[in-house]
Image 1 (cartoon, rainbow, N blue to C red):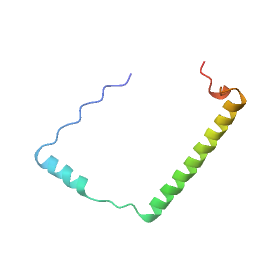
Image 2 (image 1 turned 90 degrees about the vertical axis):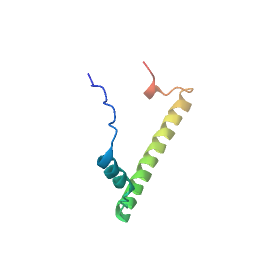
Image 3 (image 1 turned 120 degrees about the vertical axis):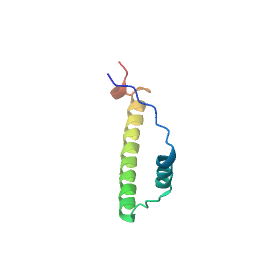
Length: 72
């Protein structure tokens, strides 16, 4: 069985200053990684849309019920 998630600690003093300074730092994404991420996103989006189109077609052919995703 999973354990409970602990509370997030509250930061004080130097720890808080370091945390805020780290959050203010910018780490720009290299153009190559951004382009790859966007290509991957488009590929997954097309796969999702294709799957949803197939599901809608199955539902239309079976009177509004998709036999592949019927709840038992």
